[in-house]
Length: 199
Image (cartoon, rainbow, N blue to C red):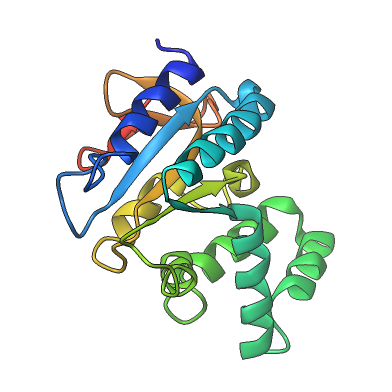
């Protein structure tokens, strides 16, 4: 298994080509940077350094924390219906426990009636120039343990943006494509065959 720095070096090389070599599909300009969950602080430092190097060659780098997307989506749910959203989730957790509250958040982020996370993210990416930009989705652990199935996010984003987007994925890998979110042993390793995995 390669080290985080080795994985970032490969990713950096592919991002610096014109066009970037992170994907063979123009409508799927995504990649996954997999790292061990215990390396979170190292990942944050290394992605800051990577951003500086990419900016030095003319790239516009955007760091987009998934935690920010989570809270933004919940705020949007509250705007749609004042009886739903963050306060409703807090009340539900007090009344029925964490698992029920987590399931409600999953519904908000996965159901077209509310705020599908992939659409919310696509809206955030809409103002970014795909020609010279790269987005890093960070703080992905905010979606654990089961708030949202992160491995399906890039597939759901298919065709919705041309902005090169890197999902910083905390977890383990089995084989060449099986990802286990947060290395949680009760999770199945889910494959992603169309998106290149670094790490």
